[in-house]
Amino acid sequence: MTEISGTRTLHRLIYTSRAVTPPEDLDHEVDAIVRTSIRNNRQTAITGLLLVHDGWFVQALEGPAEPVMITYRRILNDPRHQTPRMLHAGPAARRVFANWNMCARRMSDADDAILSTLARRTIDFESLTAASALRLLRVIRGIQLRTEREMMA
Ligand code: FAD
Image (tube, rainbow, N blue to C red):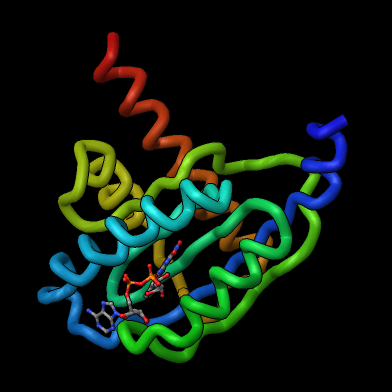
């Protein structure tokens, strides 16, 4: 019963924004965002994926509708980024991102594989749609999972 009502209220929100800090100085700031996000998102059952690339943020947030919207409102007010553009917000049948993850320069072994994949594509972050952003984040999560599996083997 709990699971059924949880599924019904599951929401996914996807947005893009631009980092205020230049890419070469962003690592420290991203570390702080990750620390806060892990703490807060765990408490509110929010999962998702945050991509940091080329001065852009692309994030998917998944969880119960209310915490997702409250978190997004906090994120909107954050001075560390600008011009947020919400691509999608609505009910989701299931979580695509079962944990909270992120991908940024040099943060993990998977990031190297992701960066070389991203380098082979031209991503027009300004024109991302809900579908193309979700596809991009899914590809990244796939690479992360593959790398995790390879490291455990
Ligand atoms: P604390 O971390 O204790 O911060 C207190 C206040 O100080 C907040 O208003 C915060 O915005 C501000 N602040 C902290 N550090 C800085 C800084 N270096 N420069 C300017 N202001 C600062 N939060 C989540 O909970 N989950 C997420 O998934 C998430 N994703 C994010 C993605 C992006 C791209 C960005 C930019 C931020 C994200 N955040 C996320 C952080 C979010 O914007 C809030 O800062 C955070 O949720 C506030 O949490 P807190 O109340 O525990 O505050």
